[in-house]
Image 1 (cartoon, rainbow over the protein chains, first blue to last red):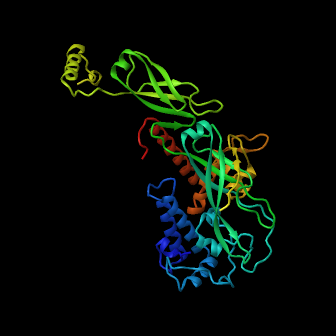
Image 2: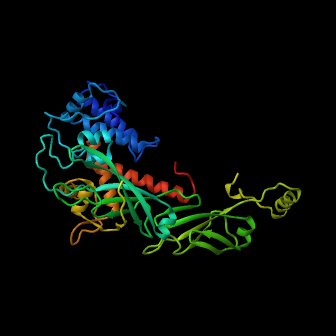
Image 3: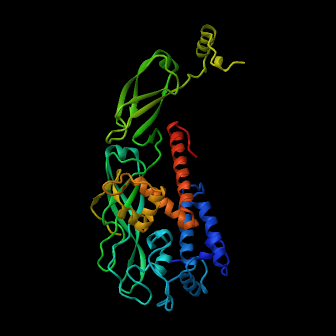
Length: 315
Length: 103
């Protein structure tokens, strides 16, 4: 395990005041806020910032960390000495916004993640229900259409016989039900954090997110698919074969259609009550004028049709 | 690493969570939720016979709570930010539907 320099994570000096630390934290929280940031790895960065804030904003934790950290540099191999926290009275378990040791690094968990312990003095813990936990699971559109099983790995703190805390990986196989929507949550009862002193475990909330699909776009339960069509298929109408998420279908393109026209296939979206629809978006593709014959055909159309696509613009 | 059998969870729909479940999932006090509902910052999917919340309410409540705690934000201000994020997501959805890159 490597020592973490929380001061450099927030970009402040070791002697920074509480106000300076708060200002630095908020500035970085704004920059890396997952709802607005386009920075690569913003979510990971936000966790690091939150972890640093969890320690440096709490006077007791900060004092203990400062005492411990005098002889360490960031990245240096680290193992907490026995009773390193003697004389400090910080509370363990929860970080800012209810974040937990499982949300943070091994380093944090080893120092401040003593679940089931009320404090360094080792007072008896109350029987308490474990906290609920939140995680994301990425799926493909096909998983929502047909249902699937996905494996997710969570990092959970565990306490050994000596009271040392470390994060361990826990792998769950979770059934993704058919008809799930992007952003929907699945609750797994009793799969959250362990309770203390025999209390029940919390629940795990899984937020389902769809991976971008190269061919289909999803909105709620509706699916959108762009279908390339030839100009004459739009102009004259045609019956065309289109591969869709649930198999190839034949659809009639009405004559006189324009590019961008949507054909709705009712109930062929994501299953549900009611099921979503599949929208086929017609997109005209022009044949290339790359031969004498093709050029002549275009010239004939230009001459014979007298078509001015900009007539409505005036001028 | 430990492995388990396949777990089947409950898909949260409208009116899935009680007040206490929502509060617990946010790691907040139920009184915090009640105060935000009274302010109109959070809404319930249904109020009778008891308030019930949807998965979207849960996502919104977590977002508002994090903003309040990170920036000491006023609940109304945090709610306005959450509204703007919802609006951005709605517009990104329209871009995606139109086949355009949302970024």
